[in-house]
Length: 142
Image 1 (cartoon, one colour):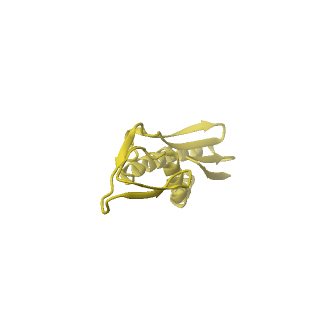
Image 2 (cartoon, rainbow, N blue to C red; image 1 turned 90 degrees about the vertical axis):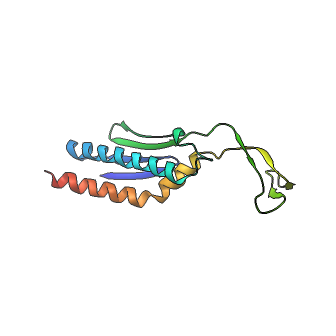
Image 3 (cartoon, rainbow, N blue to C red; image 1 turned 180 degrees about the vertical axis):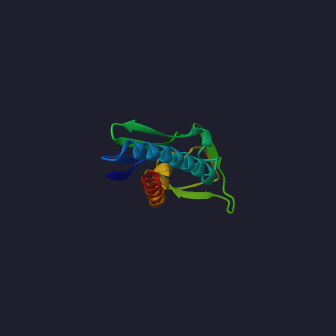
């Protein structure tokens, strides 16, 4: 049985009652998939917000469960925001107040975990297809 679940910034991949060789080939494929996911996140998210050096991926085994993960550490520091097509910025603060200002000097960088979660959820069909192909290849290689 193969079970795959996407949770937050990880994919749980459970292999029950499969031959050892098939499990090993799927584990290798899982490593390849997560290395590709890591590189695609780094390529598609502007470095201004998420630094590629803070992105890590890997695969851990816990019994018959493999956990593939992508972790995006929060980039430290702040950046400034200035209006580009107007004279002032206008936005709602967390308290619900309308704010108008010429600049925001200390805006923290985006949190990385939601980016990884969104990307993994969007790419789940591709991950399932890749793993299905790996199962077929492993079974046919007998």
